[in-house]
Image (tube, rainbow, N blue to C red; front, side, top):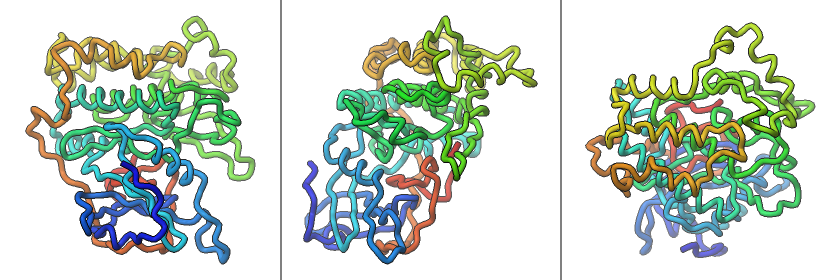
Length: 400
């Protein structure tokens, strides 16, 4: 259970720092072991001040405050557990349970040296656990807003846990529209089409699109929609239309149409859609998601027919419902758990490593084991190494 704010406890009295894991815009993350009666391994995130280096202390970022407030209220087996928050010398430390892996690390392991596809049973277990955590978040009125493989932790026991709530927001009666507070959310490759088309109001459906992208990546071992991100104008702060990312989606999904998505024409960036096909021969005859899926099955030597060793036609059905253009028709996390994909051939494995002989490498931890407040390397908010609760810094870039 969360033990509350600790005003007089010091980090080194409670934890032995094993080494440095990662750094990002909002702080540094360390691996630690408990001491003085505290048992287990932990990830400790040290937040830096909002404008570190100035003479006057300015506090920590709004994102950091938001993350800490949400973490202390949430408790679920498939959401990374917050152990405690410690205040020490104007510094704030948030202590999490430690996870030895994340999905990006697992995908990268299968990609390297052509180790082959992630076993179908493993993928099904990962998806089932991920959706359980997401059902809990959405029932708690929390949008994650940055689901991607690097933010999905996996323990050594094969338990999947949603991590990194730095962009999460409560969506129950917000004081302002969510767009007003954060104009850019979700790493570009996992960003839903309604966000790409400039919607000012969005729902938990954006998280389900991200889950669909994660599902596809677990199957293909690379992002399904790998676009290039245009950065906002530093002067005007205007958010540009992400033409390349939308194009990557349309090349596989086909062009969205009003008959299938009635509110499409009301999207602020709707006018840009007609220009996507200009000069692009691939857009004149786009493949379909079904074609993409069949190619994926063939490349991974999975049988097309329903089988425990293949995602099968049920996998395609679930993927289609997750990657539905119209957010109002997109399947919810709760309904996704009831999809036949999870019931055919028996229940999903409770541990995603069960029945698997694959040994995944442990997380890289450097011997910089001093918790300090030196200058932190800045990284983009959507980057893999951004306050990542336990993923290596120089391992694999995942940034749209």
